[in-house]
Image 1 (cartoon, rainbow over the protein chains, first blue to last red):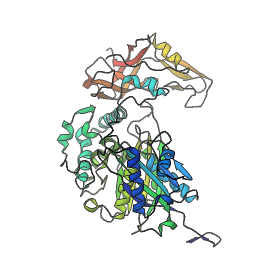
Image 2 (cartoon, rainbow over the protein chains, first blue to last red; image 1 turned 90 degrees about the vertical axis):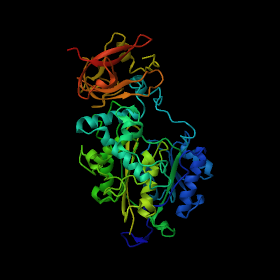
Image 3 (tube, chains in turn yellow, red; image 1 turned 90 degrees about the horizontal axis):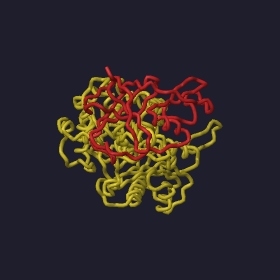
Image 4 (cartoon, one colour; image 1 turned 30 degrees about the vertical axis):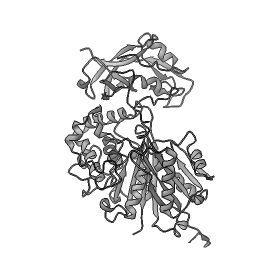
Length: 392
Length: 133
């Protein structure tokens, strides 16, 4: 218990993360609600809690009323929900909203979850995503961009043009992700063997300069995390993970809107989150960055301040972001080689929590005390950063 | 390129699409703050004015901000084709196609010139090609 200014006892309502889990990953043949149920119940079991404890729920892509639909399926009546659709960044945004709801006393136990069966259901499409009433349907759809791929491809083309980097430098991100995946038994490419720069370069171009190997996987999967008060966490079995900071930015949804393709909202969301945490980028021990495409990682590393503008392509060379390198990045194998169920944001958080708890076996980053998870949604449209920490 | 789905129109964008029939590319102009914007909207995103928006005709000059050669065509398109962001001389950036040259021959920052692709209903899509020099 803490004391308030008047000396009265007050409970510690600071929000902490007490549970984290994946659902089944890969090519599952399971329904979305079945996978959601796995994610939620496994994360609650990990926390030492049960569905009866849950009074807050945040998720996306279950149905038109996502949290409502999932609550009904789970047989609960939450007093707080959030179904904000912001692509893969939504889950880092949910951490902020859930922490605020818990700290304000609106909820006690919140589950944030996501699941998709996009691989086994063959539901992934690169086009026809422009809703007819939006300006993009009038002014962008007629030109045939792949969504979201062609936007990232144009960002990559611009990045290579202004930095002098080549496709082989982008490839380094995919090569390192594969090396991490070889250490993660849950990774889709765990048994696939190493990936070489040459193999990335020889992979078929989809939207130049990005090849198939520059693009994230299309898999089933998902996960969940559980948040509650620090007070409640004292009665639970695991070490609570502290939420040190969070920030977000929403910048555009039209491909023509960004003034500068290589400056992303991560510059805003990261600065806010790190400021709130009182940490500098160099004080983060393990980093999980949404790797929808290889270029996403380079742009995010720069925008988050882990290296200077225009230098990420050099920063990632020579195995620096691979296992054994001095910058622990995307230790699960990432969206590129571990799992990409359409919105990877929740799995960034699951891996960050596991690293801070020291549960990552062969891929464990020794002594990790701080972690940063950075989600990106749409076409670099939404950016959200969460900084986590653990007492050691 | 085979026929694409006809783009929708709304009450704000109707004059823009109508002008394409004459191969004129309009840009929305704010009479209050003089900003030029694209796509057309019900407000000026610079000053917020909702009642002083009119139109100017684009010069047709632009520079390639970036581009991508699409190798996996969407329905109605034939790969490879070039999707690009072109920065117009007037300031706004537009999404477009680059035409009139081998897809791999384009470079960022090179100058391009407005061209048109006619649609089946008489409207036309602004696309960009090499400058005449």
